[in-house]
Image 1 (cartoon, one colour):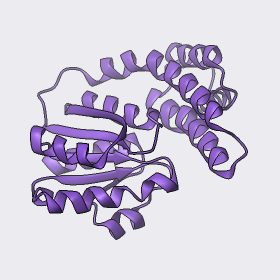
Image 2: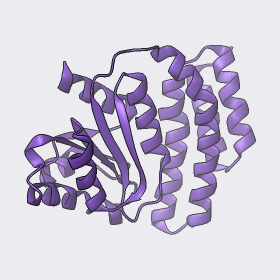
Image 3: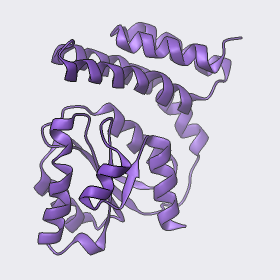
Length: 216
């Protein structure tokens, strides 16, 4: 029987090889084996995507590689999502959460996984998409009145824009009406503290735990 660590390592390698078919096969094998699909997403697929992102920032991989890895990861997430949703079951909405990938950043997988996990946990998710302008975060808070507005940044060059969300929410008089959450590969608790964000999510599971704690 395949172990969790083995299946995670193979999924990570397949994402880094940009191999959609291999990722799908590994995810199907994982479902048959009954391993933890959340761990597979975080420690397998996401770990591979993060490694590709690191190599992109170092200049050893380029944008087509990032897109190819993202597509491979998406293929795996598509296989695993029905299992996650079945595990989640039907629950009464715990509140609205608006999330998006920050302006200038085309990465969407991490944000998509967080959105899926939050939906499973019973939140109503307003998915703003990727490359989201700062003004659109503010507009979403104004229109939807979510309990949390979250931004994902996968590059240090886009991470700095998370600070502008804080500033523009204050300028619009909305900052006290919503909690802000930040996440993404280069983002840390120290960064969240520095810019004044309410929550830092290390991964999708952490995002769910912290959002649940808000409404507990």
